[in-house]
Length: 494
Image (cartoon, rainbow, N blue to C red; front, side):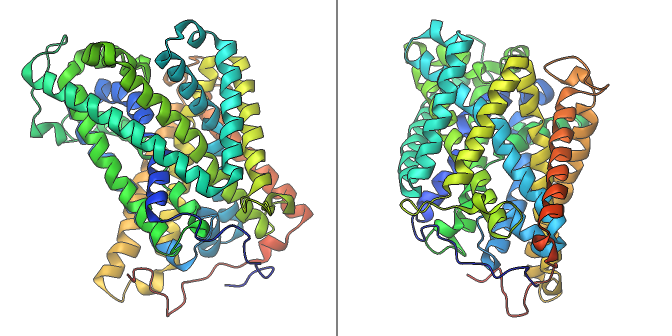
């Protein structure tokens, strides 16, 4: 493969974090407590007691794509991840689109994560009236985004230490809640009656294919974010292997967490109550915590708060590092490639992500809160797109190795392709479902389609326009040509 320009060595701080820090960041970026709170009600409404099975099934495409990330990171430990790898495999245009998708996922969701963090923090502090004040919550959410962005710029080490504390807090809180809920559910000591857990709950097909499809769409959202660990590859000790292992292991830890908590919640609350309160989303945990823990309900509220706050910061990481990587390849203006001389972090791209995210959050909030929720729903389109692109890029880039051994064929070819195929299938189903205005929070058609689909397609069309404008101004990046992995490259070497 040829490059348009020699690539300068990055100025990011090498070895700033280790494997455990990388694992924690990968976990924190998924916002486990918040993600579970947001999806458990809707998933139960779709599949009933088989919700733990759906969380298990959602793990399959995630771990397969995580394996693709790990393999590609071994040969190209670039903080731009999908952008860099898809460019290698399929060329500049596909790579640019993948990079744009990653960047915009951060822009769409950062403000909403900050809002959840603010609301639940106020509830923990007993400031319920302030939590119900939209102007106050929006203002505090903007402040939180700015603070988290500043921490990202101040240093990856500081970010890692903060994430270590936040992930510990939410893990302990989730564990306490899950154990109490499960014990009370099994004993029948639950205001909802309680259900005895069964191995049948782990069968994702128990409610039929249509219900499983809807559940998988929600499950993929719950797992999304683990790749933040790999976006920090250039700042991680043993950059070729540690970030990839952290990404894969984080999906396994999430699997155990999600299935365990899902079993506890279904056992404690039953299916009828969860289905009836599916529209409450993250507020479901607030309601359940009072019933399960009584005066200790603040423990679960704190878990959701710390989860959302942690993810507010870690979601900025992939977008900012992708912007940096794109600028280094001349796929974006050079200023996005700026790295702070003092802190050795991507300062300009971080503040751009924060600024656009705040503008999006406040602007859409002014339209309506439902429009904000619809913009988050549009995330499923972008997530499925860039994950699927990465899986395809892995199989295609290593295509010469697929006939060398069964291991290579499975781990570099079949696994990534199956993961990409499942995500492409979910992408098609998302487009179909989101085209119906009835499947939106707004409930009204935009241009004859559902608002989430209009937002998702609009974002991608905007990216294509910007790409064409930049190519017209500076086409050097588009001189790059796709290639294949070098013969002496072993992406599965220990």
